[in-house]
Amino acid sequence: MASKIIFSLILLSLVNFSTIKTYAETITSQEIVNKMNEVINPQTAQAKAKITIITSSGKERTFIYDSFTKNRGEKNLIRYLEPKRVKGQAMLMLNNADDIWAYFPRTKRVRKLATHAKRQKWEGSDFSYEDMGSGDAFIDEYENKLLGEEKKENYDCYKIELKRKKDSDTGYSRLIMWIIKDNFCPVVMNYYDKKDTKFLKKVLIQYEIKDIDGIPTGMKMTMYNKTDNTQTTMELLEIKYNLELDDSIFSERNLRR
Image: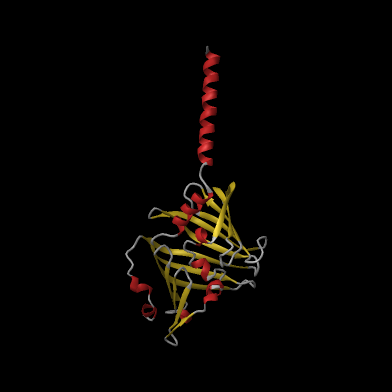
C-alpha cells in the first residue's frame, strides 16, 4: 500500500512539473517583446543623467543633462547642464527621433537636423539618436523569434532574436536581446551592422536594475562599441515616471528657454 502511495505522489509530481513546463513554453516571442516594449517605454518620464564617453585612447568626456519624455518615447527633450561649454544646449526629438532639432545658446539659433542624422552618434557617444528614441521600433521594424532561455548577468532570461523587416530602414540588420523573465527588462542587447547580420557592432548592458515607481529601471547602462573600441556609460542620477508633462515642453520655442 505504501509503495502505491509513493508511486502516486511521484506520478503527480511529474504531471505537475509537465504542466508548469508546458505553461512556461506557451509564452510567445511576440508577447515577450510586447511586454519588454512596455517596460522600456513608460508613458512619461523625467530624469537627470550623467553620460561618460571613453574614447579609444582612454580619454573621458562627461556631460550632465535633464531629459523629459512623453507618449512612450515619441517625444524627447534633452537639456545640457554640464560642462560649462555645453550648458543650455538642447535637443528636441519628435516622432521617435525621425525629427530632430538642436539649440545652441552661443548663436541663439535652432537648427533642424537632416533625416539621416537619426543614424549618427548622439553627442559623439556610442548611442545613436535612433537608440535614444526607438519607440515601438522593436515591434514595428523587426520580426522576432524566441531562441530559448539563458542566464545573462546573473538573471534568468529569454533570448530573443529580432531581424529587420524587408521594408524597414532601421540602422541595424539584427538584434539579440536577453530579457529578464521576472520583469521583462532587457539586460543585454547585441546590435548587428546594418548590412551584415553576423557583424556585431555594439553591445548594451544594463546594471543596477531597480524598481522605480513599479518600473524596472537600469540605473546604469553601458554601450560597448565593438567597431571603434569605445564605450559610453549613462547613469541615472534622478528618475521619475508617470508625471504630468505639458506638450509645450516639446516645442521649438521651448528649446530657446
